[in-house]
Image 1 (spheres, rainbow, N blue to C red):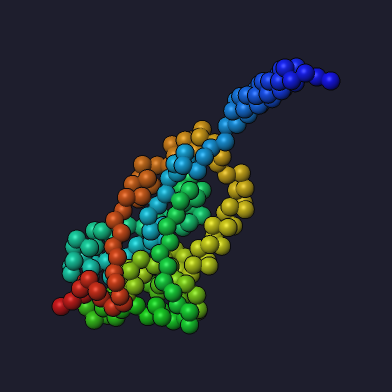
Image 2 (cartoon, rainbow, N blue to C red):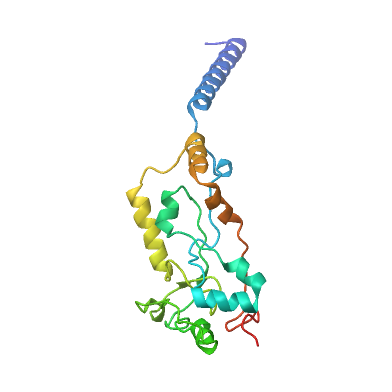
Length: 210
């Protein structure tokens, strides 16, 4: 039988061996693990990614009534799939609940244009999508409502289709850096466009107030 002293030496030797193996394993894992943590990722994104801009006559009317607001709203983005193809990896969608459909199908913009005797703008919803139930995507109802994808489900389908067609997404710092560098300066400026919020329907900011 082993004496207490011999048993103690065996336990110590076993402990040292296990620690040594664990240290070697940790070192090897650290040397081969080049995964990127979530908080280490930086991507290019766009603000109000769906924004299609103002129609010509509505833009003219808004410029006359509220130049400051006009300059804040007069910008537009490419469709979502084109943004993703250009390197954008974060999009913003402002959604409005419309469980029954039709809640935002008749904005006041066209009526304001007609009242001002300006040329009629192109239809903003030629397919009648705004009359269907489901979340809608727009910036400010009634006067900044044109979107490259009017239904939330349509926007998400665009993103899903692009993702499936481009399955190998960026997974390393080098690739993410190359993505950021590939996006043009003009596109990156769109990240900082100012968002204007309204609290209720109608003309809450007094845009068309006489």
